[in-house]
Length: 116
Ligand SMILES: [Zn+2]
Image (cartoon, rainbow, N blue to C red; front, side, top):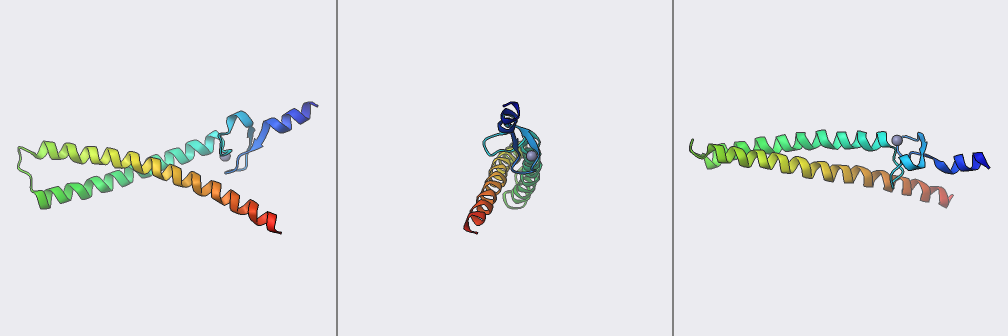
């Protein structure tokens, strides 16, 4: 009976296929390594997108708004805030999209197998 319990407790990660303890996997059956790797990927992409948006916004303010030296600090604050917010939003969206894409792939594969 002991191996039966082990069999139930150990589940393959749906992303990398590594065998993990069931308690180490989340609801999409991803192991901690996969969750953290996607998390850090989404985080670094979030900062890249945030930086691009901040540069674009900064250029727009510089060229179109042409702030006076008095107000430049306030505009710099707005640019930094925009960078922070867009980095956060990008991170959340990207993380959600990667996770969703992965789960739909699994569903597509399993339904394909059923039709044969
Ligand atoms: Zn994994």
